[in-house]
Length: 125
Image 1 (cartoon, rainbow, N blue to C red):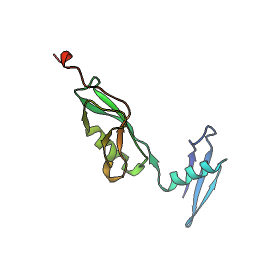
Image 2: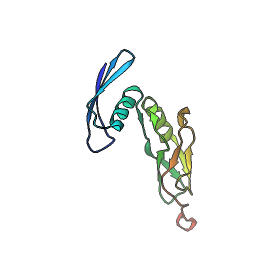
Image 3: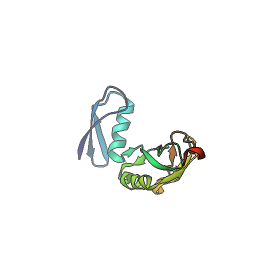
Image 4: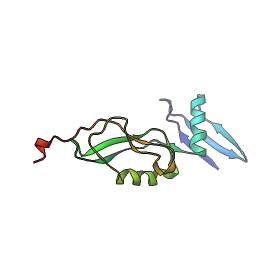
């Protein structure tokens, strides 16, 4: 199997080709070691960071931006996003608070990426 990847590690955006030769991989088109590593990882086990929002109850804002603290296997992305979309937090929330621990048994946490204060009682009416 032969695939071509556009490297995102640096601004060069190399077009890297990875071709399986039995157990080995033939990698070409990269200009740095980081690009080669990126293409091999993308070929064998692609991973992505998750960035999204979750619902906030009693907060000054209705949505809380969240991010994963590590990359998640691309094959689990849909399952993880469903869990994020279903999640809700109660204000107050501090940046760095864990919103979802060990999402979908990946060992990765979803964390708050900003503070959200409690909605003032005087404005609730």
